[in-house]
Length: 459
Image (tube, rainbow, N blue to C red; front, side, top):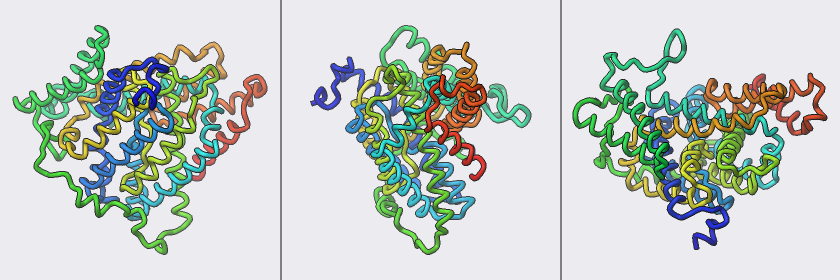
């Protein structure tokens, strides 16, 4: 059955490798089960029930992973996207003052539009129109971006008023919280790296588990002291709070639970467009980066069966809104599973099933700290920057836009902004250099450039 569904032999994959890859992806993504409910539940704007959002997050992720496996047979995982959930809470529900029901409706509309765009090949055409140099740069940029996410999540890199960012001070008075977790993350990087050097299968997954285990030992011995006021929680699973099916029942379907007469149509359109725009290019960027890492792109830089992948993403977003969570999208953490050898939809199914089981074992998965997943993200970032060797740095017309794509992603904390920088600079430089015919600049590249520029002017 598995062979028939996922064509394992054709992809030179084994059941064991695919399952390990799926577990690895889930472990690197499990933080979303803690972060998304906290972000949607503890902000003044959204104020949604945390337990209900956790269940909605798990269900949306399960549906997304299942759709990705069945429609595209790719090892990509889906979950509510970081950044999009912040826009949901702080901008739509916070600054604009709308209820979370209105925000969910906007996400639902975005999903419906995406389904239509996916079925009409618009998103596929956008993917194929992006030059190969930019696609390779996206892979590198995502590598740096997720490494930065890992480093900041583990408090290895922290805010600084003078230099914006700096390294963690290990001898400060916060040693038993920030200091020890940063030190454990560094130790996790060394452990994971050593296992990779020794070519141990499942090294990234083992690195997460070992680092988490060391953290639990530190908590039991008093080296790590939880402090909820600074989001430093206990590393030991707590089953005393229950699961929260009743609260989820109240949240389910709230996407239509508001008075349409109280919503300004123009504002709603702007919100839908904002969700649509960021999700579109975050998804395309992730597919480019992770598929490039997995050698899934053909000689023309196209991803076979991309329509299925994009449709799966759109369906997940639509169902996620009905369940009660912000935009569900293809996640860059999928690269962790790909690095472990994941090649087919069985990897995605494994990740999805674990998201479903996490509803019943949520205290365990919520307890996985950011410093334990940080080594995985940083190591995967290292593995992804290898695509930089595919960029022709002797051709300045390709190298400069590629460079801008790479650096803008981590600097702006956004995949879509990196793609915007690459596309705008590529089109303008090619036009000014009079190389439009030589570089075979497509009409869609002109359109994308105009759209990106208008976005910065109007939004």
